[in-house]
Image (cartoon, rainbow, N blue to C red; front, side, top):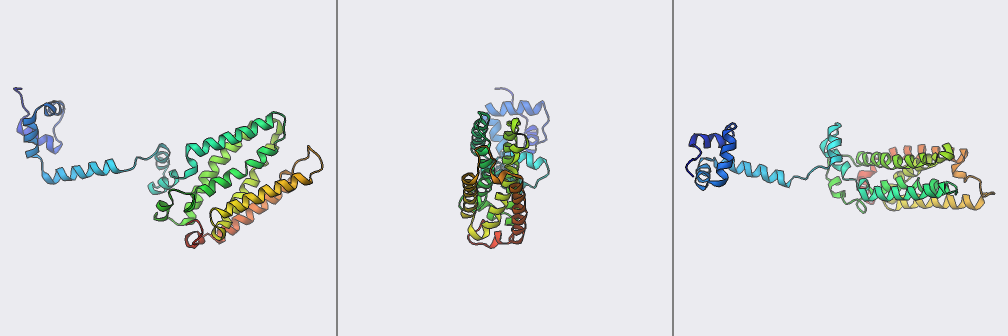
Length: 275
């Protein structure tokens, strides 16, 4: 090899000041020439070299943000908030796939000639389960990261709750649209879903993030079984999905939301709670 990179060009290369096309020629030549690489090592400032390696290590060790996280940051959300939200377990593909599958089975059951009872009974439980799986030391694999984050526990809870509600209620709403023959009756799950979710959250500081949604969901199932046992006709709508039942669900949602605001500080203090 008769041509070598000039020493002045090597120094400019080290400083990052060598411009194309000399830069491209130097890159190609250095890959094949041990003598020029040795001169390059002598010309390199050891302090700058160590700093460059540190930057490279930091770049390689830094977690790669997901597409969802990058979208949240682009929309103006703080980096640490976007990271905590993107780490919400129930926003993973496996959970959303399970939700879609369950809703699809319920919709197919209703469209095959059966009533919408199965769909209306299952849909309110999905956001309750989603919020329960998104918060607390038992079920949330990112709980340690949430504990050390510079964020009030109640605020994190609300952020993740909104994310879960948007995802699950959106899927449930799309499933309800697949039942046009039932009209507005297919939306009878919405107020019970909000009531169950708010009640489960309000009970969490006292009962814990596992028992609270379990008790709430169990009470919903018991209510449906009782309503089914006491209805007089096979085609009669269950009481929770009548106008009166919807009014009660709305009232429960409001009362539970008020109780949740009263106990919001306990999400940081409760030993058995979510924090």
